Every structure is written in C-alpha cells, then in structure tokens.
Image (cartoon, rainbow, N blue to C red; front, side, top):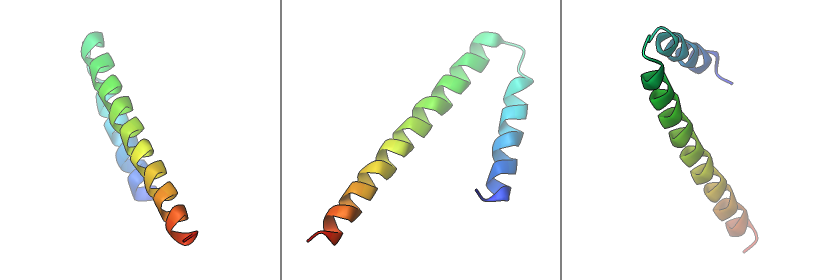
Length: 56
C-alpha cells in the first residue's frame, strides 16, 4: 500500500476519533464502510471484465 495514502487514512481516522458525538462517528464510519464496499464491488467488476476480455 502506498505509504502516503495510509498516512491520509490514518489522519482521517484520527480526526473521526476526536468527534465527541458517538452517533455522528457511527454515521461517518458507516458512510465510509458503504463507500469502500461500493469501491471494492466496482473493482471486482472491473477485474471480471478485464479477465473476460483476455479470454476473448
């Protein structure tokens, strides 16, 4: 993993951990989870398309 990206993610998580409102933290982390899940799904689809193109 690119170290700069890891640092940015860690900074964001540190910022989120400083939010006192627990409900807001849950909302933020839930949103992050949903977005990352969608990104993973898109990447998996791209991999399948790429593999299918190689098989043609």
